[in-house]
Image (cartoon, one colour):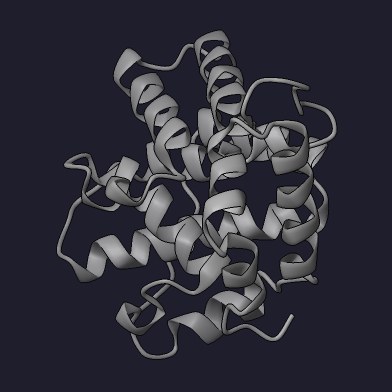
Length: 197
């Protein structure tokens, strides 16, 4: 199965440029893998999707984790969704694209988002969960995981993410990440993901 290509539209290119401008390489690669994995998992399920909206949401879903856009109080997914919405509105995006991207980013940490009827919203969660904790990797077509990792190497993403998530939980204890770290073994799940970082 070939990898889903990156959409070549003005909005998609602008989202990727923003991602590259403010994110460390490990986070850039994670966002690109999120798109590749999410698109592949949708395709395996026979679900059609708007590639542009999925790519933009994947590219910008962790915008709130970056040094440039981290907010001292607002949870990163909520702040990132707001920033992505503003970015898209300034770029003239259609309202339905703005809504899909905003909701996909807002909801990507919630397990039930995997069953969202909007494929683009579901896929950001599915793709990110595959890359962060190895969820549903067995549902990917043979060879796709290796192909994605070759094009978008992990660059010590696991250790980077554990540090970032621990910091988010410490500074925003009432956030979704704060709850995941406090009440579950979320950091251990990240550490034990089946990747050689």
